[in-house]
Length: 159
Image (cartoon, rainbow, N blue to C red; front, side, top):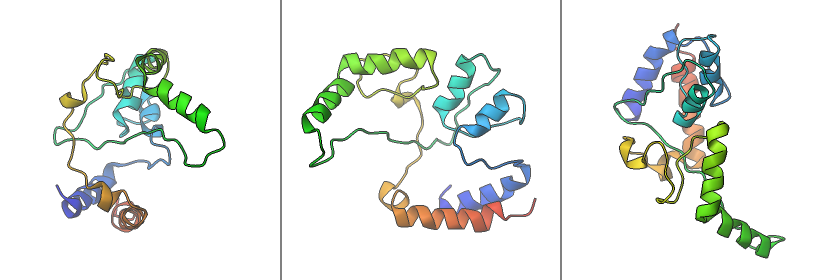
């Protein structure tokens, strides 16, 4: 849609929104408990509710979906560089990825793993992603600008 059309869409949708949450997973938890009809959330949080037995159906937008990148890093001049290297080696190893995968089957995490050799429900190539300019929208200035615009054009839009 692009930014301007996207904001127009969100402003029009505002009349159908009963609550904006501060937590990314709160909307789907409310839908799982029957407190609202639809929860817009991260895909992995929706799948987690289904796995826990709630009657949730996860649907990704046909136009494409956003994404987040979760990372690990070693902090330069940190207090325990050897421990940090050992942790990173483990996190990125098949054994570390499998711990996350097996933990996810009994917990809420449904994120896609880094290693291609680790089997998962859905391959990243099977999910249509939106084109996202991380430099423009991921910066502190971009975030503040978008939140201010959302506040003024969407949250304050007529119900």
